[in-house]
Each structure stands twice: as C-alpha cells, then as structure tokens.
Image 1 (cartoon, helix red, strand yellow):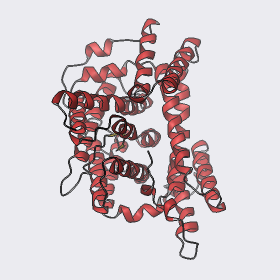
Image 2: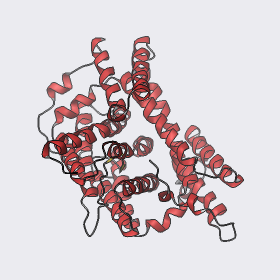
Image 3: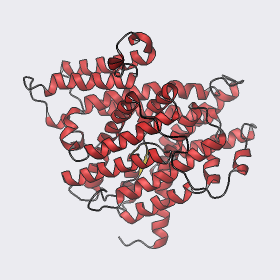
Image 4: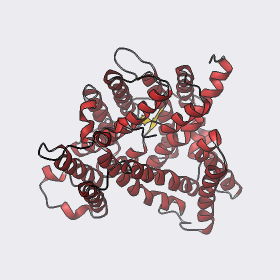
Length: 438
C-alpha cells in the first residue's frame, strides 16, 4: 500500500493519540506523588514525551547495533510507577535516575544473551510480579479519586462524582465503540473529565499561561544521579519484566508484518530498549516498553509501514519541545486522574492475571509459586518493618515488596522448573515470546 504524505501524517497522529494518555500518566502520577511543583511537573512531562519519541525512533531504526526494525511505539511502562515512588520516598529523586541509568546499562549488557535467560522469567514469574505491582498502585488511585491525599475537600461528593463519571465514560466507550475511538478511551475520558471539572471551577490554567513556548530538556535536571544497590536491583527487575512484555509485542508485530524474528533481531530490540532507558535516565525521563495498544492500531488500520511510526516518533519529539502542550496535561484535577487511574492500574492487575492464565495451574508447584510470591510481595509492602533486624546485606532483598516478591517467584521457579532433578517444564509455558502478550 502506497502512502501519501497526508496519509502518513494522519496515521502517525493516530498512533500518538493512542499512546499519549498512557505516556503522560506516568510522569503525572510519579510527579504528584513526589510533590513536584507545577513548573517541575510541566518539565517532567515535556522530557517524558520527547524521550518517548526518541525511544521509538531508536527502535524503528534498524542498524548493525540496535533496533528491531518493526512498527513499534515505545512509551513509559506502568510497572515502574510504584517502584519509582518507593525509591524516591526512601532515597530521593536522584536515586530514581541512578537506578534507571544503571538498569539501562544492565539491559544493554544482557541484550546479548537475554534470549537464553527467559527461562528464568516464565509467565508464572512475570505474571506474579506484574500483579503485585498493579495491586500496590490501587491506593494511589483511590486517594486521587477522593481529591488527593491531604486535600481540604478529600472525599467530597463533587470529587467522587467527577472521578466515577470519568470511569463511567471510559467503560461506556469501551462497551459501545470500536476501533480507534475505543483505543483512545482513556484520553477521551481525561478530556471530558477536565472539561466537566472546568465547569465546576476545579481547573486552573495559570500554569499553561506561564509555560514557555519552546524549551530544551537538560541532562540531570533533578540533580546528579545517586546509585544505590536496592533501587538498582528493583529497577533491573522492572526492566526485565518490561523486556518480557516487549518480547510478546515483537512477536505479535513479526506475525502482522510477516517477518520471522531471529535471536539477533531480538537482541537488537532489547539493546535499543536499554539504550532508550539509559537516555531516559540522563534526560529526566522514565523506563520504556513496547506499547501493545499501538499494535492493535496497526492491526486495525492494516498499515504496517515503518514510515508511519517514524513520523509518530518525530511528532512526539516536537511535542516534547513545547512546554505549553505539557502544561495542558498538568491542569487535570486529581479526581479526574483518579477515575482514569482505576481503569489503568486495574489493567496492570488484569494484564498480570492474563499472563498467569498461560500457566498450568493443574500443577501444584505453580499455585505455590504464585501464592508465595504474591503473598510475600504484598506482605512486605504492608508491613515493611518485619525485616528491620536482618543484616543489611539481606535487607536489600526484603525492604521492597516488589523485589521480595520477584525474588521469591524467581527462586521458586528455579527450584520447581529449572532444577536438573525436576521434571522438565513445558516449553510453551517457559518462553514468553512463543505466545503473544498482546
């Protein structure tokens, strides 16, 4: 199919709209949790959008060293939200970016042989980890639905009505619409909710008027990165989970474009993702993963040209250079965000459950892996002081619920499925890439 310049532009804008809400929600949620000023939050969103564009361009541009060369769009991964908030609360914002930079470097190094490591991360492991991450995010959504923790009108009827109205719009759009409208239901819900909030006097456009028209991002805007062992371990686990998710997207796009992916192709895809994460840490952005909603858009439109995704990446870069566009996203009231968060964070949980659905629960050992990893992950999150008297070297693995749950799942999976004396595992369960995660 030959595309004119006009069709390429219109299709690329659709891809930007499909991923935009998910991309900006991550900096909005993290920035709000960290107590950033409106000016800092505007900068954070700008940096994030610009780097999403660069990450996408790196992945589509296939060369000798990196790039999967498929029509894939990269955006911020929601699995990193809870860990980043936890890292900042314990070690400060610079530790977030130290862990992202270190994690990106580790992914680049692992890219050479990650295909051989996927057996340590079958669906029973990754599904458990993603489920724990999603569950730990829900309290943030509930607080925002009520108006934001510490707000004067916390729990006010107007806040609850607004947040549930946004959730209802998202649900109805998913029920009664199809195709592109359905794929941007979160974005429509946010716009409709903000408009309603404006009529209620809950929207302040001051920051939009104060924001500049053009702004370049700067490395280390939030300070010199700090490298701490626990945050680095946490972020590395998050990035490995993201790689497993991306693998499913790669295979799905390979099927759509009739391209058989080799181990070398996958390595270059992982390397591009690691490089994007590394740049994100330097330029104050976040970890990235391949967005499955854009795969759905490729399937819907039937257009599989890389030129469309290259144009989408260029649009994201341009949007990131205009702070007023980023400032518009910062005016969204907390109840509006809360309503959308319930759907989006719930989808993280649902996606974890979907990953677990590929597990053979007829085997008792798989039930035990999920039970212990989710139980310990949530237990450490709720009661973090339970391991306070352990040696520091051991507390590295126990002071964060996600790390504790992840290591529990990895170790139990190794005991039951990788131990040479155990029964060999079914390979269709062991290799996430063999079944599309989309």
